[in-house]
Image 1 (tube, rainbow, N blue to C red):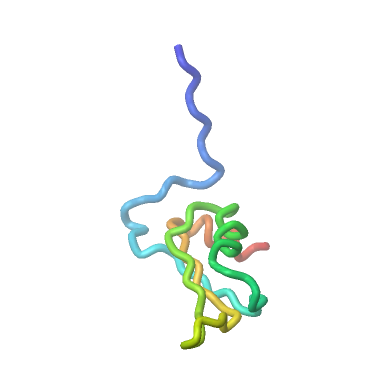
Image 2 (cartoon, rainbow, N blue to C red):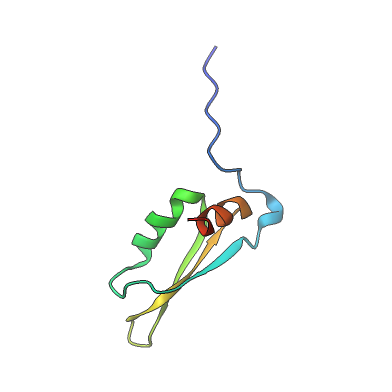
Length: 80
């Protein structure tokens, strides 16, 4: 008999969470990009989206929206 896979530390995404749970993140260093934000916030649970606000010329505005599949993950990110 094969061992059962371990459950992730966060609940699996559910269908009724289709719109996700969006957080606003401010005061981000201008040198930080979406990849770095994804690395930081994905430790709390599965991400649906990372959207960095940018100027028309592509420079960061220093803020972003991070959307999680679950409320549990969004709450965990807020608690730190």
